[in-house]
Image (tube, rainbow, N blue to C red; front, top):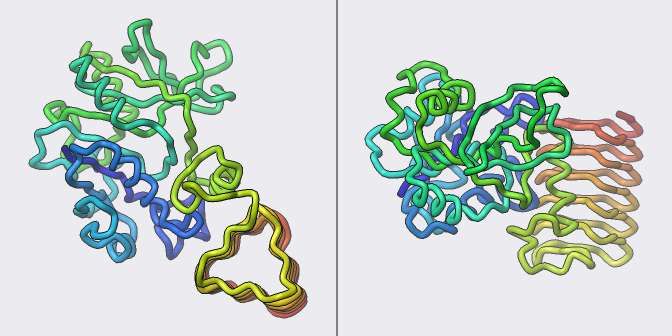
Length: 352
């Protein structure tokens, strides 16, 4: 069995973070995001190869994962000649594949049991199975309506209040049979959500839903990107660094250096190679990336700091995201909700 991860998007809603870092490899604590999806796929022993469908800065992604050595699964890459949409990308990546496919959108973090979804797909003899997740504010999403037997009935794009009949949305995780891909136009942009799936409903194909009430989030905005870190700190999603970790105390990697007189407030994370100097304060819900230097008496609170950034003496960073290789000068103030791209330089005493 093969799996396809749709990892070709530009991540425009996450800019400036994604100008030099494709969305599928933005760091979640100390790991590139796609590592968490690969961990999910490893629940299914039959999956012997993961195909990464790429378009935007493909080499950056290939440099991280290589042939999959170290991930526990073989990885292969398919680079779209031009953006093909979700449907076009699946057809392009699935050329020559005849067996059942597992497909993930490249921006969803989930705790779904993929093996159970595969089992349901086979039990029902389905042509497609879609994972759905319930949401509290269904009017903000496109909804997927199902029947009493779990079959997909219809898709409702941004419904008005009187059209809302359910609270389940597309979770971006699918089990698909390639013998239906001839309905996807070849080598053109095509949406699986707006084209392929509705065509299955119209033709009466066996198209079933698996409703998962576990953890799910789309990391595609700065707000959601911050939220997934908070959720992991709070134990709402367990994975990677936090599998089995004690979150009631600061988590400090073995090769991090925290000087005497520095103060760390749980929950927080300090990665290998980072330095937190005397008098500095790392507040709750902060992530200090690999190689980051937090100078004397600086204060970082509720912020995500990507690798190799330096925060100067007496600087304050509050509820912000700082990308790689930034330099925050002495006595600077980076205010809440600031998002600074790679190599941003703030001179001494600057304020955002």
